[in-house]
Length: 180
Image (cartoon, rainbow, N blue to C red; front, side, top):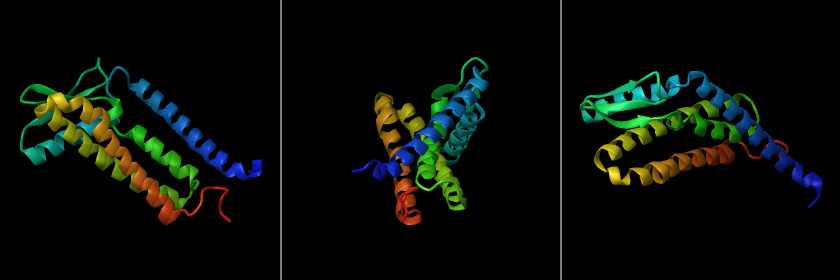
């Protein structure tokens, strides 16, 4: 294999890592900008989760956040059931998703539209994840660590991999530099 044959793969990796690193750097600044309070996107996810829990369970679930902790608590019957941290808002997963889309297709109308649709799917999946984490925290506390750390995180990333597969199989036939 010659050096020239590796250029497309190196270009893909360079774009992916570049977008991922810049995205995470900007995300870190965003989170720090709001510290020690909860950032608006995390607060939004917590509020949407509470709304979904009220709708589906009929119970009174609300959110609570302070100016001293970067979390939003989901409260039921005056008891904190689940704390939603910035890592629960799905933005980091979206950064990984868009880094791949950009590395495997570049910035264009099709990639932008697919990214927006992917963000919506990731957001809805993440909301489902947080709703189910609430249920597990409330009813099956001994399983919470495993479900939170491994099971639901894996499911969310399987959804991202499925979106990536769809992007590659249906919309982009070759990464930047590999098209004939």
